[in-house]
Length: 268
Image 1 (cartoon, one colour):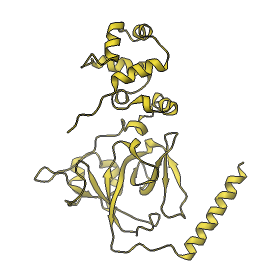
Image 2 (image 1 turned 135 degrees about the horizontal axis):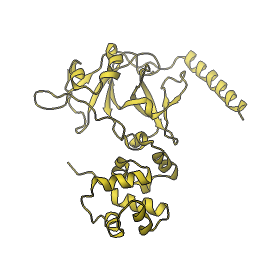
Image 3 (image 1 turned 30 degrees about the vertical axis):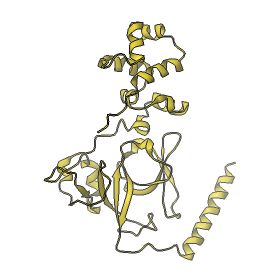
Image 4 (image 1 turned 135 degrees about the vertical axis):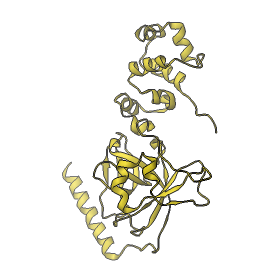
């Protein structure tokens, strides 16, 4: 496995330059010598002390996870301010738990099937391998290696043209920032909210836009903190063929679009 690139050295130099601070000034503020600070910025200290990470994290108000894993120079000023405000869920998944999995007798990951009746309990037991062990398990050929997959049954008609009762195979997504706009995903929401299958877009303010395939349902946004897991759509199976929209559905959609346009214009 290739080692993950670490951006700590380039990030701390970038953050210092962003604040237009000299090495001497910053060194004094975080209780380092200028020589030590210079060595850290240039990557000459191969194993910084944990306290060094914490000093920079506390001063710049950016998590250690982001200092290590994210190339901060590639982010917009808005995204940087989001990071400084503690919104690491969107940018790095830093507040997301490590995914619990189960394995078979060959030490290969199982593909668990989450029954409809288990939805409520899943939100409480999703991080417990013993809880997951009770689910039906499968192995399937031709799935991409190096990823974790899980099967979720669909309910309701907001997923049309995918028929209700289909089984969606989702690929676990740890790094949410990799999502392209309107990526189809199973989204596991906190609290009393349901599992939803939506087209997912990360908004510029760090919230998450959820859009149904069935155009009769209006899109809505949720806070990243309200999301437990995101499973990127891989494939689905169904006993029914997807049905085209009926004339009545097309007409209803046109009427709803007109109402939304009138509503939007009334706010101008």
